[in-house]
Amino acid sequence: MQKIAILSPLFHMCRGGEYTAVVLCEALNENGIIPDIYAFSDPKSLVLNRFNKHIKYNFKRILPVPEFFLKLRSYFIILAHLLLKDIRGYNFVYNMFGYEVPFGIKNYGKYLLYCHYPYYLDQYSKQFKSSSFLRKMYVAPILILNWFMKKNIGENKVFLCANSNFTKGVLRKYFSNSRIDVVYPPVNIQAFKNKLKKRKRVISLGGFDFDKKQLLQISLAALNIDYDFYICGQITNKSYFKKVLMRSANIKNVFISANLPFNELKKLLQTSRFFIHTKEEEHFGISIVEAITAGCIPLVYNSGGQKEIVIFDELRFNNENELISRFNYLSKQYESIKEKYLTKLLLHIKNFDESVFKEKMLSYLTLSKY
Image (cartoon, rainbow, N blue to C red; front, side, top):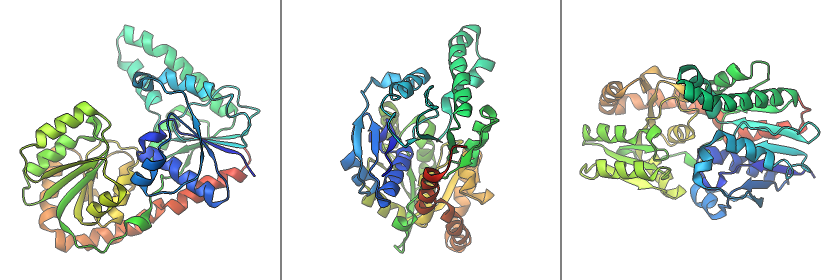
């Protein structure tokens, strides 16, 4: 029996990124393997509530730290090395939370890095080119660490996976000599299949935070009072969530729903006509695929990995004015255009089914190092 570890420090948050670790664990369970999951806390009941998944794993606690540390690139480099002694006896390690690979893993088992987006790598590289001298002095040591990390990944033949071609393109700028596979995040397509009656409803799903731009959705709702707008997600930024509540307080067709259980969220998706996603350059967009599966017509930004999901140009927008005009047209023409879009979208999203993700992730167990 192979001994497998999954590294997912923020597992307890149960967002889209953590769902990849949940489905990976389920795939291993289906093959008789109970992995060890390394995280800050154990979210067993939340996994069932949020994802409707029953999984078996051995919880291995990572010493919790103040939230401030989670914003530091250097902390995750340190964390990767603190875990080095813990992963010594494993046949295979799936790192599902970043792109930090500890130095000294050459003689360890196989190591896979699943990159949702190389945020710190890309951010600091851009900052160094455009920042003041003092900022450059702060960023330079991190870029040096990044350089050693890239070298370490190449020399140790780590399996490097990206969650979309968009993310792969960003990684390619920094890992020009490494093989990078695209393994799309998993979506439980069967769970959202739908024959319920659609209502004049728009739904969105995403953590309440500035980059998700829920305030833009509220502005759209105020212009379309004949549609109900359900804005759903987890509270990831309390101050922004308060702004959302304040802005929507006097708009009667806006309903703010935080931390909904899986079955409630599923029913809302299945009874909504449209799904709106207002984050620019989303790295992929699991919730977009779930919405299409539930029979929603999506409207998303014309950028990032979501372009790989939403294949129609007219269902993508570049700014607020385009969002308003596109929704205005689509909402009025809904009955005549819904089949045109959904037929092709439902066929396309089969590429993102959980079964595809499971098969690809399990295949690495039998591969030799690159």
